[in-house]
Image 1 (cartoon, rainbow, N blue to C red):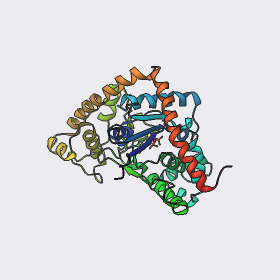
Image 2 (cartoon, rainbow, N blue to C red):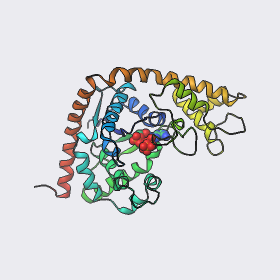
Image 3 (tube, protein in one colour):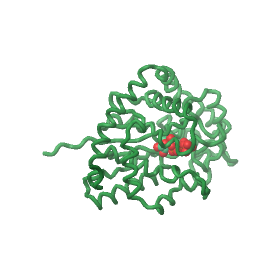
Image 4 (tube, rainbow, N blue to C red):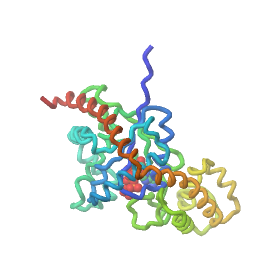
Length: 332
Ligand code: AQP
């Protein structure tokens, strides 16, 4: 009888500050759940963070913030590998092999590139090619499953296309073709002030998002001022009521209650009541994360965990890079 292969999970978060409830409910919450299901590898993707210029000192702090947040939300370094991307050279090496297997046309179609570059010819090249680096991040670890928010679906598709293309050329033992894993509630949390756009770290208006480490007063202000509509009915309808639907989604993801149950619970109530309750639900959900973050952020434990994680990640990455270099005929 053949032994069942352990499920391999990979995902990452950019250390760009302001990790928000969209990142948490779309991706990070899944990281914790999946720890029980297989071998999980969670990366702090610092090389992605320099696609636009970053102050080096701020970046360093942001890297440690994400590492501390990983621990604060419940990722256990005894069960999962936590490490910083640039500590593992295999990401850059594999990224080049995949770059040479990609087409400029498919990269030009990436909506995140189109949104961020807006046709500007001086848009950074890193912004154009980072989906390939993301593909390398995933394929380097032979990941079966990639827990991410829905905004990453196109990048996961590109990763699959690249893996299949290289496999067709060199054989199916070159790459594992991964699947994205998206949650039902939380897969796409929208901006609080402009519910047609996704909640984002880089949006100018601070009240458009709730960051995991926000003060209770800021959480309250952002939710109470969230854009809704004028018809007054608490009903899930993404098309016509994107603001209220977004609040219901957030409420559902934090409380575990289904959106349908919430619609029943709030039948006949005003938006003010829903918002007030969502403030409490959100504050209660984030309180233990904030407490644990304060405990671990400046502990000596943090850097030791990252060093051990880099060692474990490098062990796997070196094997993949050697295998794929061999397929391409690279090396002495
Ligand atoms: N609004 C969102 N709803 C659900 N999931 C989301 N994610 C991001 N925004 C939402 C998921 O969070 C994970 C980590 O994201 P990231 O830090 O790697 O980068 P991002 O997707 O570029 O996040 P932001 O907040 O939008 O950052 P900026 O503004 O810097 O571009 C990913 O799994 C992502 O899907």
